[in-house]
Amino acid sequence: MNIVEINNLTRKYGRKTALNEVSLNIEKGKIVGILGPNGSGKTTLIKILAGLLRPTNGFVRINDEAIGIKTKAMVSYLPDRTFLYSWMKIKDAKNFYLDFFPDFNEKKFDELLNFMNLSMEMKVTELSKGMHEKLNLSLVLSRDAELYILDEPIAGVDPVARDQILDAIINNYSKDSSMIITTHLLKDMENLFEDVVFLQEGTIVLEGNAEDLRNEYNGQIDTIYKEIFG
Ligand SMILES: Nc1ncnc2c1ncn2[C@@H]1O[C@H](COP(=O)(O)OP(=O)(O)OP(=O)(O)O)[C@@H](O)[C@H]1O
Image (tube, rainbow, N blue to C red; front, side, top):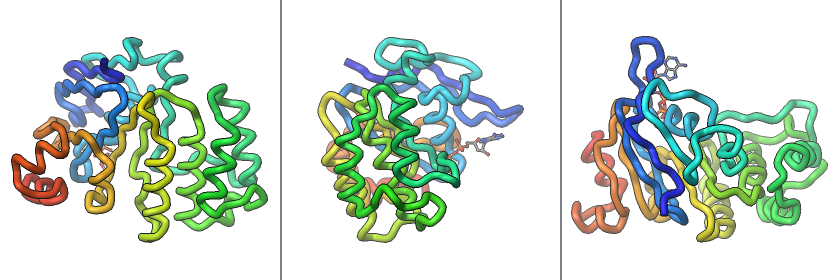
């Protein structure tokens, strides 16, 4: 059973083709890494899945539904930029999510916040970059969503916080849900991925089960990445 079906997807920005006839199926219950250098089309792909950008051509289905209100309700999306207001304390951010998303799980959020060493009274503007990422990730993972889409979840955090975030992702992942994650930090993240997809200039150049690729290429995904893009 596929959670995501992408068929001949093309996205252009004016003359620039950011995605060129991409086809990809993502199986339910998997954690999939979308990998590729700057400008390869990762964010474009993710924004289309999150319903924030329209394709120029082709189609995408999530749980057999065309992108729209129904799929937006199933997808919990972590953008690569912050989306909270500067007047907010963490407790306001929580209430904002509670109001907005019927699947927001308050208990899960309280536990995650505690795990991330954050507290309700902290002001959003007074958080460091890494703390901010931890908060955003706590919010996004606290939805009982079918599909989580995380764009660069550990960029800009120190190694200890990185491990903490990776643990939070692993602990909060259930086989009933699926995850799509983009990253440049393959060394840190590759063990999380069951499947990986390599994007180059808007085209898929390699995809498959991470363990199979390690065996086939006799190296880590990080090494394969450097061979392809280096
Ligand atoms: N709003 C836009 N207008 C014009 N071109 C854009 C726009 N957004 C992205 N592009 C172009 O589309 C291509 C793909 O960009 P995208 O942001 O999807 O890449 P990415 O793989 O996410 O890169 P990064 O790793 O740097 O975040 C790039 O060539 C980029 O310049």
